[in-house]
Image 1 (cartoon, helix red, strand yellow):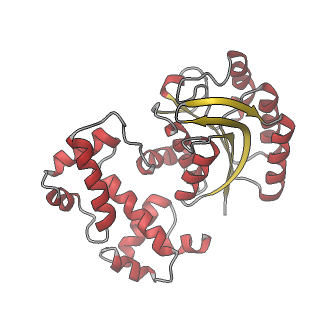
Image 2: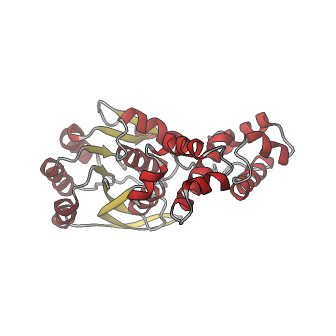
Length: 302
């Protein structure tokens, strides 16, 4: 199974960093390997302090993993000093992974500056030439010059999640452009915490209902009728609250249900029947469209 080595900091809250990378990669069916560059002491109020792992230890972590498992993708995130940067650059040059993605972390979610201008300049000169793509927050767009730049919104962890999702899809032999498009469609989206009123209540009711009843219906009209609203209004609500269509939310839930059932002893035909697909082929086509692999192949990997 192709693997992703994520090289970044640890986020105590789990909203970004190593913890979020492992969660996203695993949820999409990938295999995550990890190397920690920085330990953060943080909570919902922000980062209180840092401890940067010595560059020698970062390099030894990478060596220990890469010599044994050979990562297909290197995903680089938080790098806070030149020595660590140099160690990572050496390792990328040494192990030559098929893909290198870089998601630079310039600011924390509370706008603390995490790297200085001198380091940004060195990153531009040494790391970026080795990267296939940069995944950056909107506010950092333009700070780095690369041939392929993918922009994510500024919500906490969103850029990190997008980069991890792309890395996972690259392991399924997709092109970079296809992986980017599918990651934007599939990955979870945080609900805007500033939203209030009926929209939030309706959105939460829809999410809970389709998670509970996705085995009964995959149809947006079904849920709109149950919620006593028009499909158009339901679409407006989900797009406003979570930047997703009702159909994409239903498809993501259904995909996760299929993954869970593929871990059981049920046949694919039984799973198709349980989830109200018209046939085994219908389920297989649906699953392959989003994952790039058939249910049978997915089972072998697992």
